[in-house]
Image 1: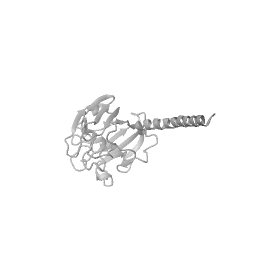
Image 2: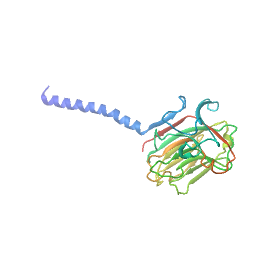
Image 3: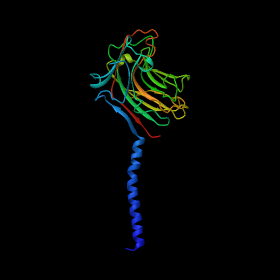
Length: 260
């Protein structure tokens, strides 16, 4: 083989090897774009990376007959000491802030499930959240841009783009009829303060219950909003209430980030 032929053969072989090497890298990048950020069925208890914002012993993993397996149990009382809990406000929540944050432009799919005990009494005098996306430090103070709550024995969702923005409110369902059953939730969420590319679709047991097209659903300049589940009852110790105890159960949760 002549020298020129050897050189061409060598260059061709190197190029072929290069193509082989870059293919997995491209596949990995695609896989990264459709990434499972978190998945938990509570089989190993409460993940140490989760931030527990609750009084002592308020959050635990137990066997639930409704889920036929492990579930996250959140139970708080009006008389609990919340002084050492986040902002000193009545709550029993799990924060996922140390695991992932919501970045504007990406589409996220959040799936979780809830079970309301048979003896649960709905507060007729004030609301309570059981799932929320809370703005990060860059967003500033204010109500969460997305939340699911109980209000007047109905499910209610609020979506907003700022602390003083008028929220988009959706009321649906009958939580009382869901007692002892498992309710499956799926949120498709693309944060966008302007609303132009925003997605906020909430499904309950496979049925679309919230569709807020081009709704502002994130605070301005906020690239570090995060997910929380549990019970948040901010007025409990400052305004009238007709309940003394709150207990809810949460099943498997998973969060996926899709491509831009």
